[in-house]
Image: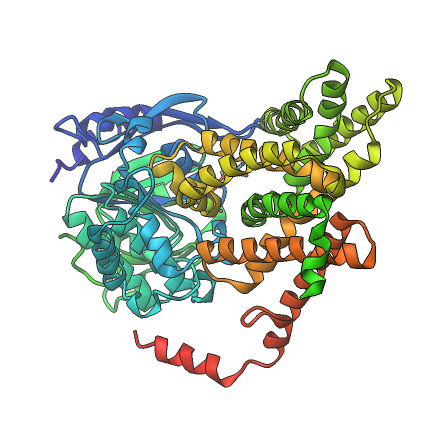
Length: 322
Length: 290
Ligand SMILES: Nc1ncnc2c1ncn2[C@@H]1O[C@H](COP(=O)(O)OP(=O)(O)OP(=O)(O)O)[C@@H](O)[C@H]1O
Ligand SMILES: [Mg+2]
């Protein structure tokens, strides 16, 4: 896929921004990135600087996690990519094109946070999924046979076929998520943005969603997922962007998703539990287990010193590489 | 049968019926948008804000509809601009803009002596219109209806999920101002019939009633149109028989229908929510074979 960025090595004196800029070139070797941001700055009308000089690049065929505390700018970053907030400075490109042009070509699919949707709206599950096809239709949005088939397939893939005639408010939290996921599938956008797809979702649905994202990744899609579910990040994300008002670090999960970096991203808000020495081993093995949790699944790091970036990162299943 | 046919011996009743129905249809369609998009206050604002336009047009001898339209759009655009360039919320800005414009209209009206009847402007004059008025209203109405129905799917996406509308290439800014234009047109077309004060009722009630009764956008549009036309026809007839003003009679009927829908709607009515019945539970179970 892409070269690992390990050798960029982060010299001690470098600022995060400098490192980010260097890596931006490394991680998209052939010139076309999935999503690339340069000096992205978003200032809301009330003067609130939500993002400042954010730089990152996500290659194609990648699942990338967007991790940060509440208010760190995750949703803002999504909105900036979709052109929903004006950029005060900097630019975003999607598959090598300026974001605006990419949007006009129906390349981006967006799965909103549950709270952003009006669940009383008079639309059925299948109507929502059909909206994913609108970008492929003419001005009058008249569905062709292909559109109907793609909707059927998308509903089937997320296991929502039985609910297709339900009004969207009459679903559970996990089912609601799956409807919008089906819409993204039907849309066939090369880039899929998911804002906290795992909140209010049980482990079964979560695994089903992860499975689906993996298969989309294997089809070449670029997937950016914001999540508070730190434990599942090493399990299914190839890359990670750590964000707090700016991009703190980004790149391969193994190099970026370290205890030290998580400390920087979350400050004191994470719960750390370190088990060492006699609690863990009968001999005097110096390795320790570090359990870090935000609010959901904890992340478990095991190794000599969880700070040095060489630890084993374990999620629920050991095989994280495709 | 006499109850229905007798009033229509008179031309003014025929005209009242014609304009009532002409206005009822686009108002119903628009009301669905207002209810779903949360634009009810916007409807109220634009309808009040047309007043200074009407008075100025009257002074200058221009068509009243033109003055009303320009002034209504000014309110919508000013609200959008001020919201984007200040930290105030939209409803606050709207409240300031429309009450200011309405007050300006009243001041202008009392300052320049005209033969304009303020009560006709405020409460409509369904019984005093000419065929020419009806024609003008009809042209506007048909334009709005055609545009709305042809673009209804985009309007649906825009109302439901503007971010998705954006990512599939719909220009949401154009959509926003396009819809505000349609809204202003409907209001302008309705004002001669129902007046500034009551126009908001025909612009909200049909959509609100229909929202309680339906689960799908296109059905919602359809039911809203039926409700709206039905209340217009029955309201006009009823007002003849009980000798009341037609526009308020229509609005009273709509309100009664709304209360009925609120109580008895098959799925969302209050009564239904108090005792869930067997059939509903059965369908839930059969659907959950996942
Ligand atoms: N419309 C807005 N106007 C002004 N400030 C805003 C607006 N939306 C968000 N913000 C601010 O921008 C910052 C980033 O918000 P954002 O919604 O992007 O956070 P987030 O990372 O998605 O948080 P969460 O984890 O709670 O979803 C916050 O400080 C927030 O208060
Ligand atoms: Mg958010």
